Each structure stands twice: as C-alpha cells, then as structure tokens.
Picture 1 (cartoon, helix red, strand yellow):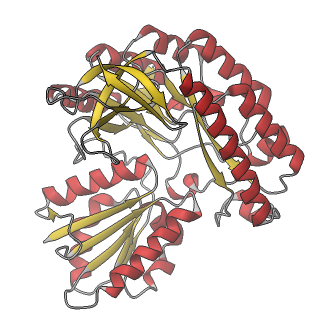
Picture 2 (cartoon, helix red, strand yellow):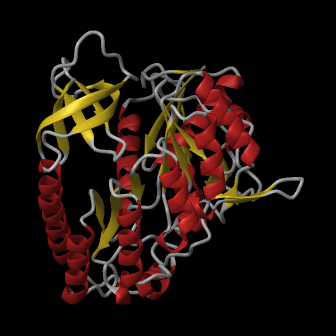
Picture 3 (tube, rainbow, N blue to C red):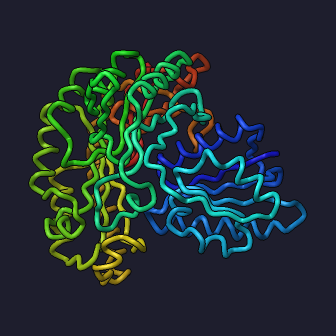
Length: 437
C-alpha cells in the first residue's frame, strides 16, 4: 500500500514526518508523492498558529472532493491531533488521529482503519524520543536531528506544552550515532532541533552529565566539515559556556535564532517569558561582541492580549536596537487550552494587529536591505543547496549566517552540496546575488 504525508508547520513536524515515513516503510508500506496513487494520506500539522490549521482543513476539503473512486485512509498526525482529538473524528473524511508520541502504533492503527474502525491515539509517552529510529531524510545534503521533544516553558500563548508534553531529552549516545551516520553518508549540514535546545540535559548510566554546550562540542569535534546549526534557543537559558563553544568551533554556524516575542516588558510578563527587554538586549550585545559575524533572527507576536501602542513602539525600538537579520512575525491567534485563552482577553482588533504587523515587516525590510548592501563586494563561503526557483540555470545556497545567495555564474563543475566562495554583487532585502570565484 502507498502512503503520502503532507506536512504543515515547523521543522519538528518535518522531522516527525520523516520518522513516520521510516516506521511505515519498515512495516512494508511504500511512500508516494502522488495523491491519486496514495492509499493512505497522512496530514502532519503544527498547532502553534491558526494559519497552519486552516491550511489543513482546506486541504482536507480538497481530498474529500477527490470522490470515492478509491478507498483512502486519512489520518491526522501531530499537534493538531493532540489538541483537537475527538472533534477531528467527527469529520467523515478522517479515519484516525495520532498524537506526536504514538507514531510507533501507526501500522496497527492503519490496519484497524482498513476494517472501518476509527480510533484516536493521543496519549503522552513521557519516555518517547524515537532515539532508535533513523528518519527517512528528505535530501542528501542537510538533515535535522531532534535532541529533545516537548517544552517545560509554559508561555501563556503557547500550545506546545499541551500537545507535545514536557521536555524529554534524547540519549546523547543516540544523537552521536545519528550524527556519525550522517557524517559517513557525506552530509554537509546538520540542524539540531528542540523546542528549547539550550535546556538539553542528559545523564549517562555512568553518571556523566551533558548539557547542550557539551553536546555541541562533541558533535563539532566528530566532523569539522559538517556545518552545525540549532533551533530554537530560549533567551533566558543562553549561557556564556554555550557562546564560548560557538566561538571555539568554526563549523558552528554564525547564526542564532532567539525568539523575542515582544519588546514590551509588560507584554513579556503577560506572555510568561521569564526575561525582560533589557536582559534580551544585553544578551544580543554580548553575542555580537563575542561573535562579531553572528546573525541573529527572532520571532515576534503582534497584537497580543491588551497590547497598546506604547507596547508596539517598544517592540519597534528594540528591533532598531538589535538589528535582526530576519524576523518571523505573526499576528496573535488564540490557542484553546492555553493560559491566555482561559484568563486573558484577545481584545486587540484585527485591523490594528495587521497594521502593527505591517509596520514590523516594513521596518525589518529596511534593516535587512541596509545590512545586505554592506555585503556587496564581500566574499562568503556558500553551501550550494539547489537551483534558483526563479532561474533554473542559477544555483542558490546559504552562508554560515543563514543569508540566501543566488549564484549567477555557476558552471557545470559546481554540484549541489559543494562549498564555494562567492563574491556578492547585488542584493535585495531577502537575497544576496553573487558570482563564484
């Protein structure tokens, strides 16, 4: 039987889909990218933001429109399955829902669905880390390695602790083994994943303790040819030890993602973020002083409960001050079951939320354009990742600082997966353009 997985949302969902693909393939199922060929269609969707959920339901309606010429098993995986549970089963097109900790049960769940038995498997397994499963990676150049699952930071707006449970840190030896396997296969870049990677802790059977800086140090020494990235980091837990490890190893990328969410201390307190704006700015200044070429990206939520113009202005001021390389900005949407949904009022009109979001986007556009112009005539090492979407005759890749580069004079001698030196000749706010030298 053929299965197809549609993934919406974050990098953790992408990895979960790779794990699901590995489990099903091992149990005799075959993967397909053709929805008309698929006997089993699985939707793996993030529940952090409303947009991903709306995309899911739109796609479900499309699947339903395909008709009944072929019996298809349809399942919902991931955080949406954990959050919405039985309400999803009320939809005639859904045969089962499976939460993030129950993927090992999928083969038997599918077999039950084939017998027209609907089921919901959304229980938490506080020991599940899928450490022994090698994911079915999407390419041969870059890969994600999850080092933890779940989160202990109960931010008032966030559904993750309720859909993925508390933080479960993976056995350090299984992480090392997976990294070594990727090294042997010639992978060029690995991203370590977790809802809060810098709170990673593991104690081995012999009593040896490891934190995230230790893990990063070990992996960097295994294969210095592999670029190492990690997401996401919680600002409160970003230690001097971790900064020093990044400085120590050239193969740890000069790019950090530090979610801010708001520049207003009042809003940060309502969000239960456990730091204030001055602490955040001090951390950014320390990182940029210690790692001068480091690019810092962030997340910002606009229009959070009771946000006023003064709160928004403080966020804008902090963006000016920190000069982020990229901002992932979102309009606040209520997530049922969170603290803010229960106890705070979503009282900022959508029009105001949208206007504030647009102001943030416009400001970041100008900052990015100014900073990218400073890259012109400078040399960067670029990992070639594929062909440009706008011009298949050109290649694109990324710098260590995560800047996207389109290479204009690439020749047949350059292959996807190569590291090449590129001189920058032009830019937009989002992209650098250059030539191989």
